[in-house]
Image (cartoon, rainbow, N blue to C red; front, side, top):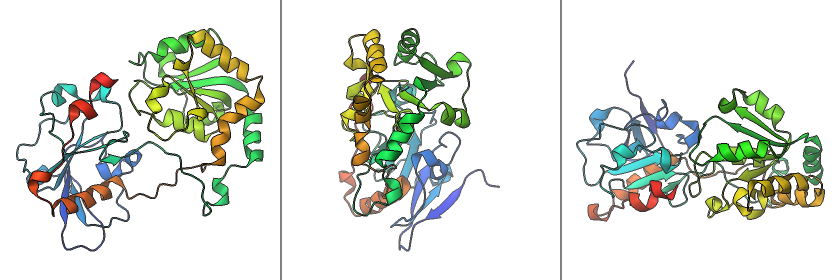
Length: 330
């Protein structure tokens, strides 16, 4: 078996462009890493995906996952090639020992969770209910109340990354001394698999504290809680600015003067069912699940590459790393 994978994708086209995955993403080819939704379905243009570096100079797009070591860098770059940085984790974890050596405009495009990305790829998103929305995608008042009635504990947190730069460990420790809080994960030797997660997620609140506090960095911690009708508690409210997430569906720790005030607020909400229920008003406007009808990121890349063929080489866009992906913002 070859050490690289070659995939065709797309519909009928006269031109097939090459997308080169420079290195695998967490061990997967880009098109197989489902979390990134880089699937190959329903492409309107035709491209070829490969990981064979002999196509380095002929590729139209070069994908670079900046979360892991992507050295050695390509040596045969053409001016019209679209170098694309990819990361679904915050800039804090990027390979800055490599990025710092690159020109500020080294990359032409970006794929990330940030709305300023060339291809915006959030972990999840709210989709408004329309007249075409299937009934099973709409929460009923009865279902919501049934979910609330199942709740048995005040709060839950599951974390795998200890000593996080966000400082969440200290806040969690303080909250454990002030209120009822169940904590699972690698940091306290209490593992919790998927079955455990579903079993334990019968709480009023979920501490969706991220490992870093970076603009728009919102992961499955937040979304899994929200979709399960558990109120997420985040570290910083401003992080969610621009994501389309309403302010009244979550609680932010930085809205309070101290950890004690946060604990008191969460505990008091248990005695105010009407106010607690208000955190689920989003269900009247938004579907249960994201109605994602966009082409996959790989298909979008293919489309951009085809459009770029028609443009002047001097007009190729660039990403300004110091503004878009600076570690200083985290």
